[in-house]
Structure formats: C-alpha cells, structure tokens
Image (cartoon, one colour):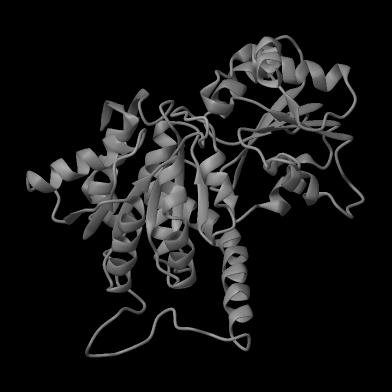
Length: 394
C-alpha cells in the first residue's frame, strides 16, 4: 500500500513487520525517529517486543549482542559518534557470527561537531565484518532491511548487516513508498530459527579466548563467507522481487552504462541526483552513465570490473575520506583493475558533500566536465570554498 512517509517512520514500520523480539538503541541525531517510533509501537502494544532503554550506544550494541546470542531476532540503529562508541561491540557481533541488523543513519564525524550527512561513519567501520548496504532512496532503504534479515539469518551466512541510509536526506525526507503487508513479509522472511544459541539445556561457548593456533582461521572464515554472500545476495533479491515486485541486484546497479564513454561510480542518495544528470545529458546526446554500488561489503569487485572495463573515463565519488591516503571507494575501485589487461582508460577520484554540503546537479555536471577536460584526478574536491580554506590556514 502506498503511503507518504518520512524515511525514519518507514523504516520503523518495516522493522515492526519483521517482528524483532528485542530492540535497543540510544538516541542520536539523525536516527532517533526510527527507534522513537518503535518504542511507541511497543508501548502501544503494536509490536510484541522488549524495548531496552540503555545509557549509551555501547550498551545498546551489547544488549542486541546478548539477545541475538540467546536466539532472538534483534534490531538497533545508530549514527556517527554513536557507531564509533559501539565499535568494540560491532566487531564482537561479527566475530560471534550473530545475525544482528542495524540501521546506520550516515552522518559526519566530529570534530568539529556536524550533524549532517556524509558517509564517514559507516565507511570507517567497513572492516568490522558486517555486510554493508547503502540505499539510494527511502523505498530502497526499507526493502534493504527485509533483505538484510533474510541474508543475516541464512544458515550459510550468520553475519550481521548494516543498512546505511544518508542522514536527513533519507531519514527525514518524505517519499511516496510502497509499504509491504505483513503477509508479504511473512512469506519472504520466516520466523527466526537460530542455528546456535546460549541455552542452559545445551551449553556451548561463544567468543572464547583463542591463541594463535585458532584466531587466523576465524577471520578467514568470515572473509570466505563474505565472498559467498556475493552469490547469495542476488538470489535473495530475486526472491524478493517475486514477492514484492521490486527488482534489485543487491550488489550494483548499472544505469545507462552499456555504451557510456563517461561513468560516475557512487553509493547512497547522491545516485538519485546523478541519474537525473545522466538523463539530462543523454537527452543532449552525451554518452554518460552511473554505476551504483549497493553492497560496499562484500565488495562486488568482479561485477564492477565487468561494468567498467570498457569505459574510457570513470569518476568515483566519495562522501568520506581516508585522511592522509586515497579516498576509500576510489581506492577500492582502482584496486579492482590491478593486474587486469582490460581496464578503463582513466579512473578519477572526486570528494563531494562532506558534512552535509549539498551535492547539486551542477556538482555532478562539473564532475562529468572534468572527466572530459582534465587528466586523471586524484582525490579532487568539488565545491570547496577558497575563502574558508584561507581562514583555516591563517
């Protein structure tokens, strides 16, 4: 059924339909509306779940870790410094192979304090062992939560999943979306039957101390499971399409790339703006396209290679930094082609939209223009304000 909803409320509605037994979170802008709505659902008797109030994000992550270890479907959400405060537990959840689902409302990292959107928080936790999806719009954000639970709880996976949605742009934006019915969700997402759990009747140890004889194999196993997820995700999204009628590959989306001479690679809400620019330039006879990355972890290297290997000029957009090194998404896209005989003529790196600075259609057009007029760019910043740079240095 179509509803005109704020992104956060839409996510809460879908989480309600997934029927988590335990929800725990700590308020932080811009994810607060999600768990605020879930808490209200529990209080009103519309969600049969235990909502655990805690004193910090670290505690929220610890609560869902414990509940998941006890065999319960769980949910949490956070943003920015809150995700960093969770970091110790985030790594533990993946190491324990617990199918936790978490929404990350992507927001800039302090200092200076900034509550607006970029993707530094999620990107900085890319190596924690979690699957990481990035949504373009609110519809995709709610659909990815359903896909996340189905993937996380698959017996061949048993890994946690972050669903990343750009703060304010998607969490507080309002769209007309198709809200699934409970019957559809039940058909796609069966009740959770844990593969293992803490149970006094069947004791087991989870996350014990291991010495060098065992530790390396645990990390290898998680890495191998991520690689297996590259095959499983498209299978799950194909099943999703049969139930809900919306098509996702789950790894990448190619938008008018087949004959393109210039292609932008990006992830998140900027892809919507880029698609509009691609349409405008195509109408003028320009052969441009977009490659959207949905799955940042596992990183779909082979899919990216196939999509870009014949493109003369590629621009990779980052809304995050690896300070003192190359922009993170650009570095990984370039690594895809290391040692390959077929590769793009040029891959350029552009940093945009940090701290919530608007990425306009003119910003995207400027990137396409620079692809035509300049040699390969390495971490070029778009829409910098020279007068503010002078103030910072003086």
